[in-house]
Length: 363
Image 1 (cartoon, rainbow, N blue to C red):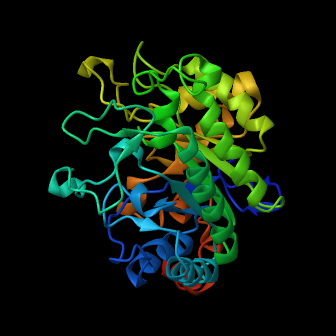
Image 2 (image 1 turned 30 degrees about the horizontal axis):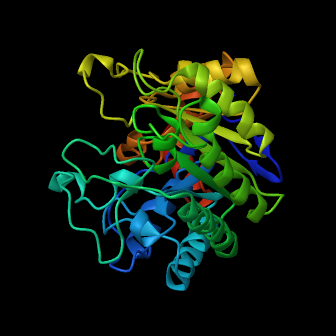
Image 3 (image 1 turned 180 degrees about the vertical axis):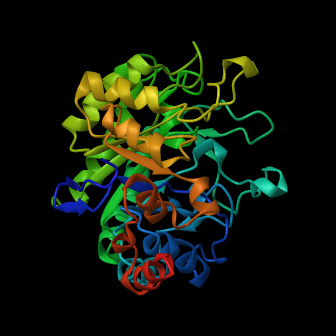
């Protein structure tokens, strides 16, 4: 089943394997993609991925986690992405873009520099639903209702630019403690207005963003949302709330729910979801079984048989592979060799497969 096509609106993926968006913190100073990003992502297309996702890309300057994040708020950034998309397409795969605003996690250094807080650029305050910040990070300025329209416009503009750049799918990042997730989670949102308190209120601003993006994004192109399905074990945002949100997202025109978890800084380490092979698959299964959503499973999936079994069991419709792709960019075509009785060199790019099939013949 790993190699069965799947249709998402008018986009058909040739297989069910998605290259998960992975932050590389390698953008040019102006936030534009470079030749490095093209090489990094095109190799996954050559390796047979059904869909290649570009890492989380900021919708505005103050929405970056670091100054090395990619962005899509300028003409220069849009043009650089157009070149990247053309290259990935030429290597055989559709390409998607994950858009985000870092919210209270903005203005830090890269992880290998310690994720240390840095002074935001002039006029670009760190913002969040409330003044609840990340321990050791900035104290965010609570977003006023009048500022929400500006943020929604930034997301809408990002969708328009992504379409002009040629992206086949976009994904709204609503996970991992960034802006939209922080509105959802009661651990970060204690607002007393119509954007805080009840589940309906906490979902209100993220759903406004989704509705604006769906309206701007072409009707024939699919829209995905990445969720932190739970904050942790028995704390904060819950799987039951994710099921309610998933139903609302489907009604708003979302086509895929990308099921992750975590991102909030929790008071006790034992409240974190234990990691292991496929540790987030149960969240995808829970959303799919209750809402009928097309769901993507992610998290510790490294083996071809495991990925195939997730699909065969009906736990998910797509599997996203992240760090294992860095180890082996040819993961997908290598999986074909493992899963089929005879070596499937025909699934490799023709200039590769022809030579490798000859090499594999008995002498």
